[in-house]
Image 1 (cartoon, rainbow, N blue to C red):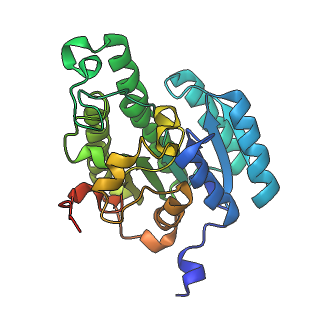
Image 2: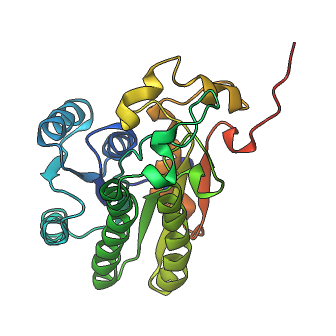
Length: 276
């Protein structure tokens, strides 16, 4: 089988949540570039319209649906609309997420009272868990429902994080259990849905330069801690996640399910700091 055949997604019906910015936009771009039918879902109407127009201009027509991923009735309607318009649903990127705010440590290692557990705002906890975990569950549920009805299998890809594997003082506390929950949900659903030829996997990024956390990764000073911990000495651009997304969406990964694919420049290893 040729590489072109293995990685072919031409004509596949693809849904991407949280697609107006960052990693979601990167997923949508690579799918559109490779000939898939792509619908982007995001709550930010203005940015979504801009992103849809820019991707269409570069790679071909894509569609956008404005929807809050925590609105289950809205998501039901969106998936029904996509399935009718695109002839079913083959690939779902359950990607939407929000920043969890500061942790109990600053990047320099000092205590940050605002991020300590006794000072956490309960409404903020509920929002982070609602978007970063519960909405991922519901997006995956809708993907599975449509794929089972169609009877042709499919690929569900959740955006988790290396935060699923270790504790971190500088990341907001609600983010950690949310992403751990996503990673475990992926394993659980992979067991359940394999008999229907529906593959379920997670992409687990480390630090990427996106708009999350107010775009702090675009600031060189703010990303110094992550640079220090990276084996490669840098953080990533969103384009660098595209090959992994294409792999999981295509037939190249037909025997891959329940996996957690880490892309973090080795940051999870927290390498020893060498002194020249």
